[in-house]
Image (cartoon, rainbow, N blue to C red):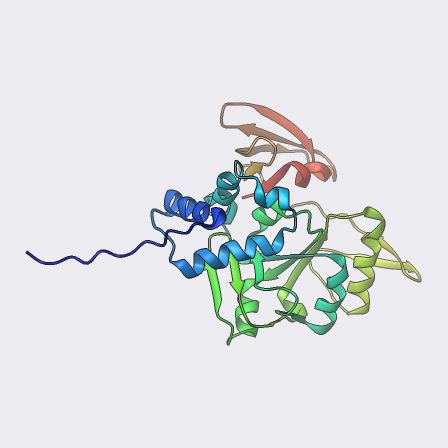
Length: 261
């Protein structure tokens, strides 16, 4: 009889690592090796400084599940780096994300960033192909809805930045526009015009919505579908849930309730 050697499964004691293992197995059918499991747990902990969020044992399983759920990690051509206003100018001016400040450097799928990480109010959207091209020596780890880089500064160019969104104090939104203008950052997905010294008129840009799009209802935690969209600038978006529930929301309020999948 042929001898079959058993492969050891990483069995962590840390509650986040253990829950990550359980979620990976449930969604993908496979356990994670120790390195990506630990790296993912460290990345999540580095992004959250809220002890209640990290320490709530009852909610850890559902939170780790989101990092593997298909509707949360689709379309990873664009990934989001979340940070605070304090660091934005340094990142954009120096065109580098410092490993000394962010360890690991963590990029998040857009639905995850929008749903779980708005407490980091600055969301920088990056084209992943550009990131990889500009950092050929970096060892990127792609696990769940995260793209991680450890022990290495990540160089960025303005061409790699697709968008910058701010979810903080509305009174500070003009600071974002000042940084873009002074760094010569031109984004296709946003626009502003300086109407007086340090005063900017910001154009509103609503998400590109199409009938038939699948979206994630952040409050009800379920998948919905866009049925109809009024053509006016801030018209109503009509949506339908899995149980034939129906709902209407204005375009300018859409991002607060839904994430496009």
